[in-house]
Length: 240
Image (tube, one colour):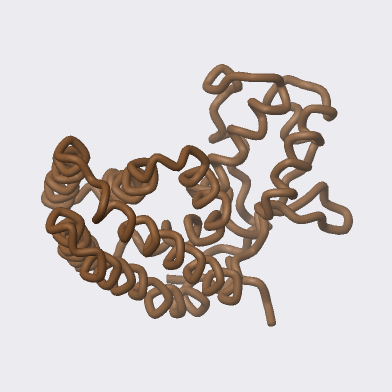
């Protein structure tokens, strides 16, 4: 499937109003735009024009400018000549780097959990896996993606390291976007559940090497699946 050039895409009207978030005007605008970028409502390369966004939200340009500056600091937006900014295109180099970081973080996470896990934590992870299975049966790919994300977030939170899940999310923002493009894969959700179950079994048995091996295998499936996206969605990737 080939996608339209981003110049043809205008989805500002699809953004929710600012009542869906809290904080200052700039913080609320940032939250709405951040979500729209991560879920591909605003695909890679989409231009972000201050005047258009200010009109959509019914605000001046100042909080829009502040929100875009925060997005730029996160690496989700970049400045462009004659345009306020654009959503940062994807690049395979960044995706490989973020996959490496995610593998390093989550390998350490499951190694720790295999030594410290509680029965309550195992029960929550088990319920999440059952939810994943139901969502696959229902053909709910978006719901499955969210449950998949929750599984990994729970693993991070169960370490007891308060800043870990936020840090892990921040350093894998580009990977999060790219993974949205993999949702239509027919067999991958079922394979993912099998891999998640192997990770959980290693943690349950308190077998740290097995848990780490299972997690590394699971995350190692990402890059081979991401690479073809450059040809399938060429307008979403940085040239060169």
